[in-house]
Length: 114
Length: 111
Image 1 (cartoon, rainbow over the protein chains, first blue to last red):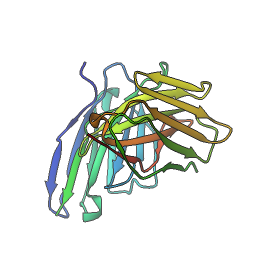
Image 2: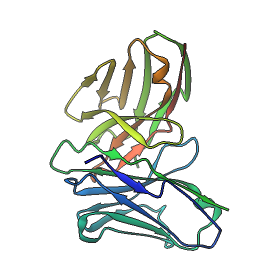
Image 3: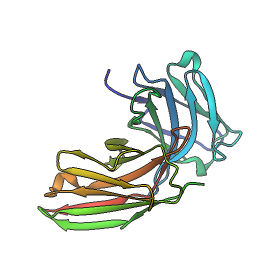
Image 4: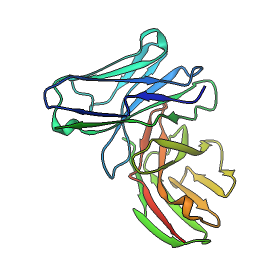
């Protein structure tokens, strides 16, 4: 296992289009998190899953955003009707709730909305 | 609501110097505190995790301390090297283990 994997690494889209990102966590990790990071800021929490259940969503996650984690494995984050303000780095992290809960992050997906 | 602050926002030091990065948090009811490194345009690399019951953790030239009562953590880097140049982020973990991050300290180590 090589760690948390995110795809794509970069995405450029036109305003109004829909985009979907994928995250593959470390295989034995049952918790999966999505964060968003804008330039010069620390990442901000968006949502998290324990296995396949989405247990918490931030106020930052508007109704244009939806996340899924079918079968408790990989996760997808979809943004509908993208806006320029959605331009950011989207980071995925995973951890295990019965180990030391250290969070490991992927390399992120850089979204640019033009 | 947890708030995390990192001071300074940027730091430039000559190679070989020892340095301390500071992190403060407002809610002492944390589960753990984690320090990360981020290179430009990249994801986050975990450096050290301190559980709420611990006072410090060490890894190589890095030492992180935690004082829950005062809401502070420090990351000490010994004998800094140009390869240490990056942004360092601290993050406090809440009850659901989601992380609240500071804005980071951008470190430049000059050769």
